[in-house]
Length: 168
Image (tube, rainbow, N blue to C red; front, side, top):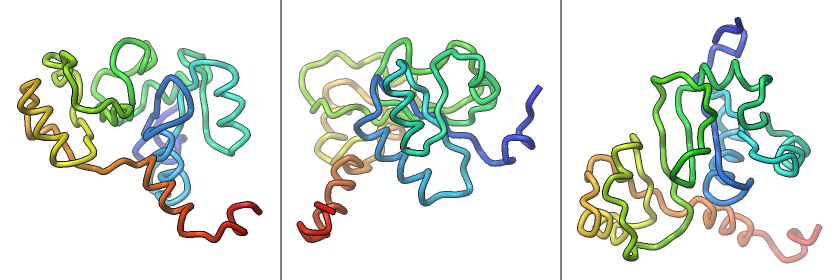
């Protein structure tokens, strides 16, 4: 069996979303480019996403595929953007952490009361959002982290460049 040593001996971070977009993609690309102390990979739920991530140079495995199995069994943290079944491969180890980046739905009348139990950390964009989660859905304050909106941070970086640079 493949051990952590053969997998670079680094903490393993798995990313999963319905598509290769949003906050999970922004965080994945940032970690892949800037944080060499982690071994990061994407779980693709379809072939088009698999091909796209592969083309961009990212480490990617098909959901519940055999090639990803050694990673799924060793993953320390899962970063997801949607709730429910299908975020994490079925054959994962049991002692991992899950970070919910959410996918942009604002604080409206959804029933999220039981969802917080499934996650170790829940990211929100602002203090206002944090308070709404606490007031509307009894979110445990210690699990809610104000992180901004990673996808917009990427856009902001692009906006710092001139139009000519962006078009090149």
